Amino acid sequence: MATVGLSLPVGLQDAGVLQRLRSLWSPSDLAMDLGTANTLIYLRGYGVVVNEPSMVAIEEHTGKPVAVGVDAKRMFGKTSQAVRCVRPMKDGVIADFAITTLMIKHMLAQVQHGWSIRRPRIVIGVPPEITQVEKRAVIDAALASGCGEVHLVEESMAAALGLDLPVDKAVGNMVVDIGGGTTDVAVISMNSTLYSHSIRVAGDEMDEAIQRHVQRSLGLQIGIFEAERVKLLIGSAAPFGQPRSATVFGRDLKSGRPKSLEIHDYFVRDALEEPISAIIASVHAALEQTGPEVAHDIAARGIHLAGGGSLLKGLTQRLEDETHIKFHRAHDPLSCVVRGVGKILESLKEMRVLCIAG
Image 1 (tube, rainbow, N blue to C red):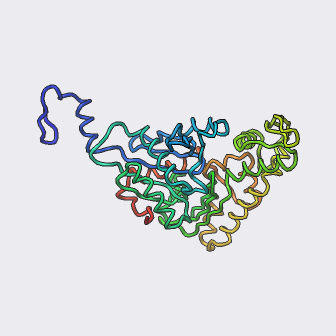
Image 2 (cartoon, rainbow, N blue to C red):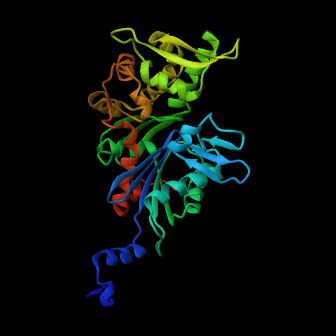
Image 3 (cartoon, rainbow, N blue to C red):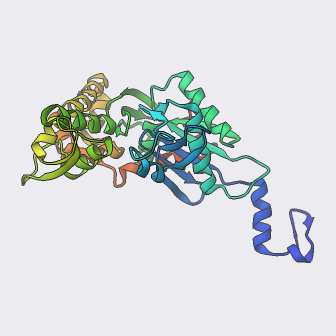
């Protein structure tokens, strides 16, 4: 039996062996949504294979990673001084290069088994207003993690592809991507971004707003993930049909002791008003900057929501009430960007035009 002109010994004439030999020359290429809150990886030919929190637990003395992703998140706030839990991404960009590289290496190791002669290609989604220095940091982190060829694409464009919007047609498509660190608003037509703006207000800022409001109003210090839990349970951008409440756990600032309190949805809604208003203002600003022809398309087709922040209860209705335009939330907003980046990876030769210079 022979393959590519190479005769193999009888003992190696096995389909599994042949597959492994081919993989030495053709490693699986990857797409990545390197997010502030979560990192998702798409493996060419397989789909989304990694969805982990963007967090690393580091041993202070040696600088070695103790845990990455969901395991590191479980440790947050519960380790001794010998171990530090770090979120190396801030506002959608790399805040700690060395730890980001460790995180990417660990996550790539989950999907790249063994070794190969050719290093894999990777396409990474980045915020629309990323600086040249920040682009270089992303590229260098990917190269240091074992990738051989790195391409970048704006997350708004990737989200539009993940939403199956006709980005290559002469039609105005408006996308609002509310992630962990940033909210990106973009208008896309004919494979180009006509307008884009990014604000550093998104899911993380909502959690911090709840944390501050609880401490200021109730004298209770709560953790950031406790604030996130409350947001998911009873957080909303508009009133519920029935009142809701949840128990929040923290440390009483006066006594220093553990304490729990019941809080109501209107209390959390008050805390979220400032970040929600900032997101609404960014949408209004985008609509004011669009030409009449594009504005007509947007009014007729609606505005599309992506990103984990778009899952906030009542947000779609609140945006519609404020803009008088229909909003459509993605079926799976958390994976929208990585699925779009994956589409570019699958057809990189034809869709390279959508990538941006590094």
